[in-house]
Amino acid sequence: NLMSSIDFSILTYHHQWSEKHDLMVKFGWFYLNELPTEVIDEIYDKKDLITQDEVDRLVVQTFRSNRCERLKKVVKKWNGSPYFKRREHVLHEALVCHSQRYYNASTMLLSIHTEGIITDFMRIGLETTNFGTQQAINCIREYLVELPMSSLSFSDWQIYHEVLDRISSAFVEHFDAANPDSASNNSRHKIAHGHVTEAETEVNSLKRFLYLNEVCRLLSYMDRRILGKNYTAERWSCPFFGV
Image (cartoon, rainbow, N blue to C red):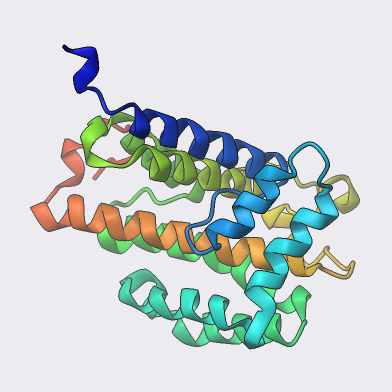
């Protein structure tokens, strides 16, 4: 009787979702809410034959079509967050650069302002004096881990952790000014210090927009859950939230 009351269709759905998410991660993306399910299903159905270039093409074309209509809708929604709203003109310029295929410009703007958005959340939202980017990401990650299972969908939890890992890796990668070429072009420090001179790609530019979209969703969620309850920094177990 107990087994008959379990809805196994939900378990099957989450299992399939996780498989598709892991496949997208394998190709350098993640399961996008803004990406039509038929595109993800096509990639999944061809998982044993599809190439990296084919996956990139499918994702890029989806956001490029109709003069980047889908991407414009994504960026427009960001104005609901105070940490994004104050950068509306900067993010608009990044979108214009991307749509006109000036990917070095869009990549640089988004890479630098990702740091500003996250540290603004620490400084303004949580009113903490410790707002280094890596510390902030560590604290946000710890918060997610400690959430009750019922408070956040497992799919969002997977996506947020994947995106935070990508952003974190760009900040922690070692950069040596004496040997700048030793760092990859994904290094935030290499970008900020003006040592990325190779032509950027549409793929890398688009990924940064999509990372920021998940950051916006995550910070908005935290604002509603934490700040909306007059949450104070002292209640955090994270040692970086010293006030």
